[in-house]
Every structure is written in structure tokens, then in C-alpha cells.
Length: 203
Image (cartoon, rainbow, N blue to C red; front, side):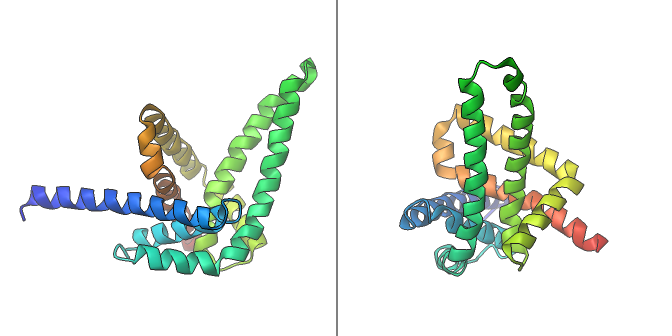
């Protein structure tokens, strides 16, 4: 196999891995009835990607996914309750602001959108922290929040990377269906691992 053929083979191999991981994520999300499946499935996906990034590219995806999904089912869903509550509060606030004509209230939309961005960033650090640290949920949330704050460059790169992916997938919606969740997880896990390693070196 020449060099060009090897490169093409590796690219196709990774495309297949990302698509398969996405398919398994969708399957296990549905197995949990979506509401109870999405959080353990997302945790399992991040755990697989963490293994890839740490050099274990030959990990058995389906079997390992099921192990992570099963082991973290209750813990991830308890964390999911917190995320859903905060998301519901943000949604209600947005709905109330849109329904009112009060000029004073309309000014609150700017800080609310800023909070939404911070919360989104927090979530994107939270799942990597969940699979990286063997801690209780409160400690995981605390670590994710403080690492997000002390690494603004990683957070900025995360936002830029995700915005770029969102634009590409908006233009080509089929890519979102095939690679959306796995690609977002890969970008956020990769940048989060860099931030975690910086923290461990300072410690």
C-alpha cells in the first residue's frame, strides 16, 4: 500500500468510526426512551472518544459503549435532571421576554443570552469532565465550571470550532445526521483534555 492509499484508508476508517459511533449513540438514546437514554448515551460517546484521543483507537465501540452506558446510567441521568431544570428555566425566561412588550424586560435578553452561552460552554466541559474524573456529580460540575473559567482560550476555540461545524452542517444537513453528535463530542473532548492536562501540570 503506497502512502496516498494509506492516507485515504485512514481517512475513510475515521469517517466510518465517527458515523458508527453516531449510529450507536442514536440507538442507545432511543433504548432509554430518549429522555432517560440521551445522557448515558452521551456520556458513553464521550468515553469512547476519550479512549481514541488517549491512543486506544481500536477500542470495541459497541461493547464498550454498552459498558459505559450501563455503568453510568443512574449517575448521568441524575446530572441530566440538573441540566434539564436549568434549560427549562432559560426557556421559560426567553418565552416570557418574547411575550412581553415591557422595554425594561427586553434589556434583560442580552445578559440572558450571555448566560446561555456560558451554560452551553459549561455543558461542553461537563461531559468530558464526567468521563475524565472519577468524582461525584457536584465535584464534576465544580471542576468543569472552574476549568471553563480559567481557560478562556480553550473556551474561545471551542466556540469557534462548534460555530464552524454548525455552519457546515447547516449548509449540508445530511452531515449533521451522520456525524453531528460525534463530531461535536470529538472537538469538545479534545479541547477539554488539553485544558485538563494544563490543570494537572499546575497541580
